[in-house]
Amino acid sequence: MTLSGQGGAGRERRAAAAPAPDTLTPADRYEELFIAVQSNHVFADSKSFVDCAPRIEPADILAAYRAQSAAPGFDLAAFVHAHFDVIERPRSDYVSVPGQPLAAHIDDLWPVLTRHPKAHPPRSSLLRLPHAYLVPGGRFREIYYWDSYFSMLGLAAERHAPLIRDMVENFAYLIDTHGHVPNGNRTYYLSRSQPPVFALMVELAQRRGAVEEIRFLPQLRKEHAFWMAGGEHLAEGQASRRAVRLPGGLLLNRYWDERDTPREESWIEDVTTARSCERDPAEVYRHIRAACESGWDFSTRWLRGPRAQAEQQAPREHVRAASAPALASICTTDIVPVDLNAFLYKLEAKIAVLSQQAGDAAAAAAFAARAEARKAAIAALFWDEAEGAYFDYDWRFAQRRDCLTAACVTPLFVGAAEPAHAQALAATVSRRLLAHGGLSTTECASDQQWDRPNGWAALQWMAVRGFADYGCDALAQTISHRWLATVAAVYEREGKLVEKYALRRVEHDDTHGGQGGEYPLQDGFGWTNGVTAALLAEQPGHTAHDCKAHSEAPLHR
Image 1 (cartoon, rainbow, N blue to C red):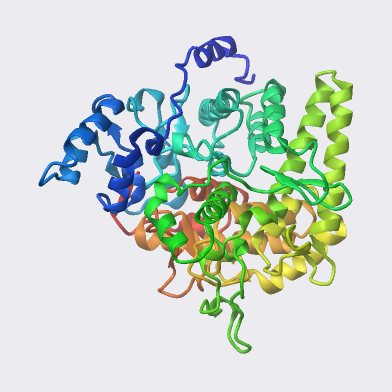
Image 2 (cartoon, rainbow, N blue to C red):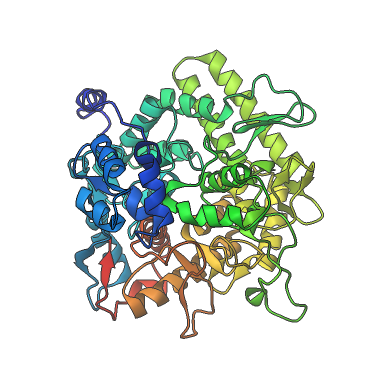
């Protein structure tokens, strides 16, 4: 018996009874106080202030600041700490158990990373959710959209079905409430989403017996409308929000953000980037925010200018980053990404199937046609026959991008690839992206975290499943085996899983977590746990099952 029918009406009533969300962001609410706190580095991490919980009404705090800030000797830091509870990154009471196998460690982490609505501090930036959910860990104390799907992969035991159901219900609630799934459940994330994987979530939840996916057809259609908004009346060569009309009338999608201001959670970083160039700051901010919607924040994938090139004689993991373009050259909204359009193919195909089940033949036919048109576009626009790979498309310059990235596996993962393309892509990936520790994120090296030498769990999973689904079993097994060895090596030495890994030779002592990016390496870690658990289940004979923690390093949550 599935869980989908148990208390469904009550759950919907509870969601409907949730208080109307307060969508003002910290910058909206605190105005000049916000700018003062961020520009004066009251906190080392820009995210700290926007996650604070005010002790009194925010309007009263702003009024107090305006009344006091001009006084001689005013202490901004003292004022902030007097009026806000700082949600510090706490040390968990969970400690890695020496000698505990990797799979058991991951299983013990799910309760540590689970949050409940009753724990939401009032008047903070956290958007209330009706049900329990998983957070990634570390500085990421809220739900994240595409992370959550890959975390859910590890919730395979029957006892986890209620949590899977809760998470799907939460995402449906966010779509119903806000018209889309925000990047995360914070007010400052509301202006953007992340890769649209809700269709994958409900499919997974149905397979696990947690929900009936047809119940979520209205939310799937609403999410599709969000991504396509503004596209219907575009002329060729025009774009509006997330929709781009290409020559020939083809309507595809890009990443976007409704705001063109510095990200509140990375305010000082964005202001610094904009000041480093002569571009319109609003343009830079929009591109930066759009890259965050992609989940790939940040990567040479989104940058203009010369890309890092390999030395003729150097192994690819030692590609120099000296010639990599600066973040200020970012151009995300000029790019039609292969992965986004593959995910939207999956969404359209799922809506077609569920509409047919619901007896809506007209909608089923319309969405099936949309899906087929997008599948054809993926082959025509993104596929490069000479290179044997999918590349993003620069619609401003009407040409494919030239940096090979692991996003090329997404059409296989969602079933949108031509079989011949899958076989050719397997050869290209084996030659150009396969590293000693798994699948490299890009062919280009840089100091951005979504570039070589780093590897990310989500990309490993999509590659393993995508290549396996198209019969490229040897490559799928190789990526899975190497990734598990990388994760196991770090766990055995440090007693934890982290958000990204530098894909070094696993036998070397310097195997370690990933590098680069705006913030220190985070441990926890939601999607690494989920993907690793799922791959371990598929490879019962892998030596990673035998690795044990040698450390008692406490886990940050």
